[in-house]
Figure 1: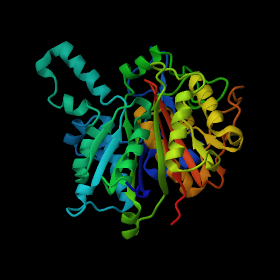
Figure 2: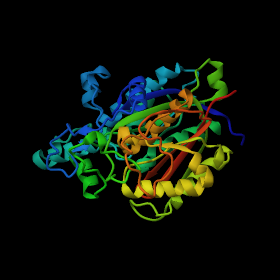
Figure 3: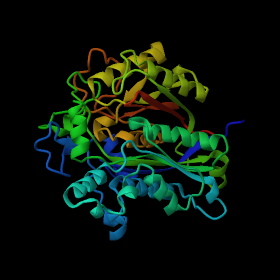
Figure 4: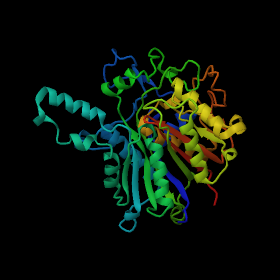
Length: 414
């Protein structure tokens, strides 16, 4: 089957750098950190007491009081980011096209705060006091379900739960749905909100989180020798992907073209990548093959770059394997240095950032990279954003369970 061309025509962001595309992007390019002390609960007894919260999101600005009460925050973030993306695209969903408009989202953990709250109710007051909205608030596909209902999209409605690769896998599957003719438009990306005692406590018990509690803004430091773990984050990044002719016919503005995606498994460990980054290697190679381009055509990488000792070392090794000598010419950055790690939402946020990076021809920085690790010796765009020519770029996501996802975007030309 002939593949159709797929383009990005809308972007919606709810992130620790701000609610809305412009605010998030401006803070990203200016190297501002979204990390601070946890305010959602008393974290004073936690090993890690810092997070990248969305601090300017007021539910009642976007929902009536009843709806806000019955929607977990990860669903609210996803809906609002999707609304922003559709508005940004100028897309009208009508009776004539709604069956060709799909929704494919990623989410790692669903409504964990809702589970936590209702479990407490169950223990204290019994099963009859559990909210009838508990299950519809908690299950991971409720973001895609509510987006579909609110927009009136009757095409494929899917939710992927592949840990920290979920958002990237969603974008890749959305591209394929359009490329192979199942949809003309797909609203896609990732959403997550698990900054709660169970979420933070669980990751802290794995010793996955940074404990630089006295200096939150400098705690996320990908590729730096003093990195000590990731910063748990939240938010949503949504994109409108559209078949090229469909987009051109309605005069849509185009951010970038989505030309390939890859997926692989490490088949190695529940949480740790192999030292040689073999799963990431095969995933990047699969994405490049799908895109029909050579490694030396890539100009920029939005890295997974979690700020954990193991990921950053293994990801760097994987990049060197895939790109060979060209690795030294690549510009690479980790936007997680500013946003923290939003888990299942990360790939959606970073795909949106990548599309804007290509459109604006400016690569975000990696902040807090003061002394690079000996094994992390590539060009990670330290401290300051870089104006540069970017024709082809990739975004990488690697998740627990050894699941990997990569998408390839290019500068649009007719």
